[in-house]
Amino acid sequence: MADPIHQFQVIEYFSLGKIGPVNFAFTNSALYMGVAVGLTAALMLGATAGRQLVPGRMQSIAELAYEFVADTIRNTIGEGGMQFFPLVFSLFMFILISNMVGLIPYNFTIASHIIVTAALALLVFITVLVYGFWKNGLHFFNLFVPKGIPIYLLPLVVFIEVLSFLSRPISHSVRLFANMLAGHITLKVFAGFVTMLGGLGFLGWLGATLPLALTVALTALELLVAFLQAYVFTILTCIYLNDALHPGH
Amino acid sequence: MADNAPDSNDLEKRRADEAALSARLRRLGDQLGQQRPREPSETHRGQPVADASGYARGFRLSSELVAGVLVGAGIGWALDHVLGISPWGLIVFLLLGFVAGVVNVMRAAGVASGSDPGAPPEH
Image 1 (cartoon, rainbow over the protein chains, first blue to last red):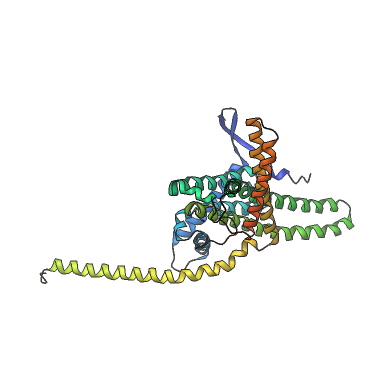
Image 2: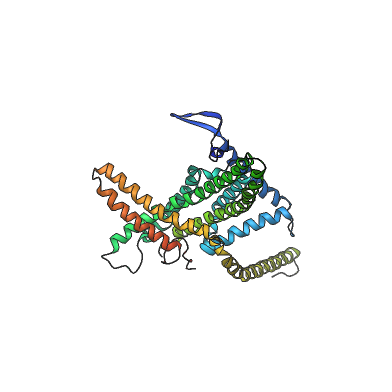
């Protein structure tokens, strides 16, 4: 009955064919990704259709989102980072909207699957690698050579720097994934307590008000976490992209 | 210049218009440039939003450490299998990964300077 993991099940709606032995299917995960993209596109296109000098409600939301991401980029990368604005803005809106949609009961949270967040983190990682080498050439390796290190320590330090660099996509993806997974499981478990206690009769219903109140509070916390994790993902993306632009630190 | 020719007069007028327009654009750009530096300080105060809840901060630091150890262990394990030097690859790389994880955490916490999370950008 109240199975807290059940909500993360990927359900196949219909198959689109096979690539080798791998089934290529349209799943509920794909559906909610489409929903997130559709909502973002509708918000942005709808908000900018009027283009008033004094913005209305929708336009204000769009302008706030733009200013928020643009300021984050300007603060972490500088003006030169604005060329990455489309990428960073898309990532931010995709994660934010999908997290918000996932908070609505019965909806699927796509960020609760590590393969999704890993794909997003790898997208950033590979962008940093490709752009870093394209822009700086071999100077990109300066990233791994901190200044002011004695020569006999350098091999070890460079090694550790490389490992630290390779661990980025893992921590980048695990953070978003684990936050969403843990939050949704906690919510489900506490909500499950309500029905379990309710089965005990009148005193049970009385006691059930406590987990119910906690569920309400947790929902509010999850709303904060959903936004915060989208923001953290964005700001880390900016910090990593900053390395691609300015590898010598 | 032939000042009585109407088309050259027109041309001059248009040129003056364009000059005025570009001057206005430059003034607007200057004003925007003046306003922008004020905004970062505002969002700079807002930057700790990422660290606002201790829960988020703790989560972030722990994931940095775990990521370092995982990468070290993964590389060590792969080397063991490819080169057949088990268990030395795992031992050495697990320790190196742990060091990398600690470096990650120190950077994320802003203790050590570096390119990574938490360190304030130089510009």
